[in-house]
Amino acid sequence: QVHLVESGGGLVQAGGSLRLSCAASGSISPVNTMGWFRQAPGKQRETVADITSDGSTDYGESVKGRFTISRDNAKNTVYLQMNSLKPEDTAVYYCRLRQPLNYWGQGTQVTVSS
Image (tube, rainbow, N blue to C red; front, top):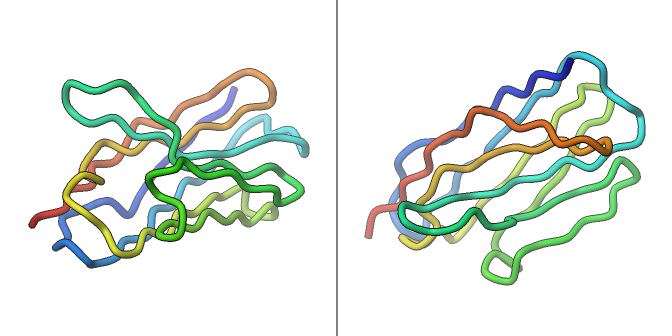
C-alpha cells in the first residue's frame, strides 16, 4: 500500500509564491514518476508537472517558466515551487505517484487572490 500526504497550500496574492510538498510512504518502487495535477471548480483535472526517479521533468504549458518540480528520492518526497502565481492557478492540487499503478494524495487547496 502507498500513502501520499500533501502540504503547503494556502492563500497568496497574485505574483506571490508557494511551495507544495508531497511525501510518499509504503511500498515505493525505486523506479517511479511523481507529479502534480490540479483541478479548478467546473474544470477537468490537468497536469501541472511530473518528474521521474532519474530526474526528467515535464510541465504543463500554462506553468512553464513559473513552476519548478523537484524531488528527494531518499525521502520519497516531491516538491512544487510555484512563483509568479496568477488567479487562474487557483485549484486543488493533487500529488500522484505512478509505479506503474497510480496513487493519489488527498489534495491541497491553492487560492491566488487578485
